[in-house]
Length: 262
Image (cartoon, rainbow, N blue to C red; front, side, top):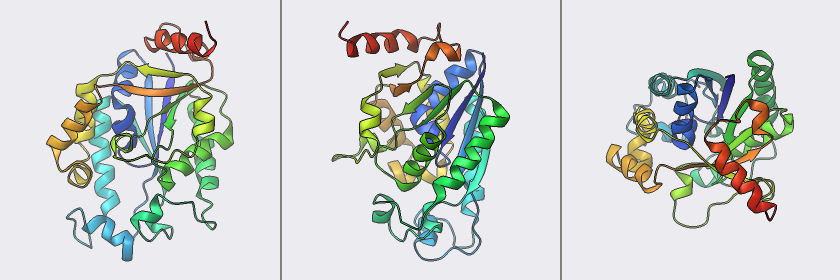
């Protein structure tokens, strides 16, 4: 087995959306690296950036991102993954001044995708992964969009499993999907998952549970409502990543045959 690199916008996204799959990959002998892009501590936050931590019950002088990185260590231990933090600033620290702006168009002066591409390119060079996992950017959070855009700009030579962004996939109303034309052109697969370890990893992000789900019980219900499924769009040849015997190959092949009319 090789190295599987999960590229997570925030400190929780990979676990929320593909944690069960990451755990299964570890069990099958893969080295799993969970790299999170937007992890930088920013001293003295103000305005909307400050509100993003105080609305979670944290004091204004708390190092919010240090707390989140500590949560990520616990989550990665539950999954068996190695954490990497790429140190970019989250959107509220880049001039996005409201919740609405986080899900609107990317600011013209926001060129973070270039810094993200450079950081990811460095990881690809040093780790030489044979499989990538990344967000489809369902919900269109600007940090998710920039992450997906940065990966696409690099045109990786290895297969990419584009995960569905949980919990945005569970929200009422139609979620914006900026990459629909690209994703619709890729076969879809349901991944083998370990729902219990996914829940354990997700529960480690305690600062997010009340805000996102109303608490641990809400997280448990939200994950249960998915049936434990972790669905992806598959870009590239899974056989080239040594996945000929990986359980998702069966659903992947079925999807390919269906799309080809066979």
